[in-house]
Length: 249
Image (cartoon, rainbow, N blue to C red; front, side, top):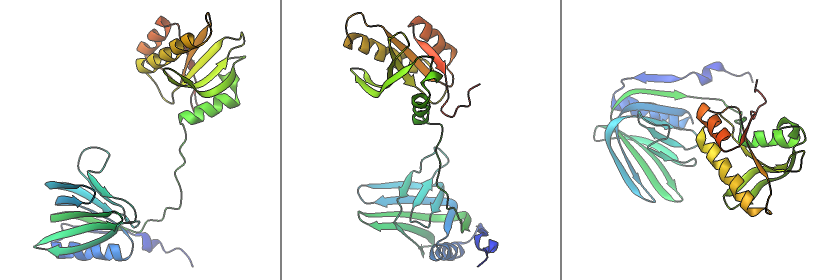
């Protein structure tokens, strides 16, 4: 059967009355659509704890998998939410649109009461892809372990996440002259904090290893700030420009 593009056409309502909004949301829930509403609402949660949010302008999203999200105009995280597996429902109660998301294990209920809905939309999305995260510190570590010469000629990785009194060293190894080398890996541009962290590792290993052991500290990142570069020089530490995805100049 050919894909029907009209099946994914969004349906929208602008400034609907409460009854129209309730019918719209009920239809979206019934057909497993992704429903989103913006308007004046109060929010209550009852479950492992209890909370309430006085009326304000908020964005509410109901996903087909049972997820419910309530967003304000600030921040990236919802102010309240329900996880996948919850059941959505809606009704009109005392002149308000009441949207609920309920789950039984544990027993939790998120209730959103809209006194006014400015906008509502419903979508039938198709998304079969999973996110492919690249550019992490783990990617950077894999690059170095596969090609140690990216750090410097003769570098030999000996261990990862080596424990020290100051924490775990990302990569522990030796240079071509047999000196201990500590690598602190960062996936993005860094400042003085990363230098301080590396310095603590170097000091801890100097105390931990045999007397007279020379420990080199290398900060590996795409770039560093000017203050970080100056602090590296002050602490006799080194910088290696290297990115997780190999897109350094």
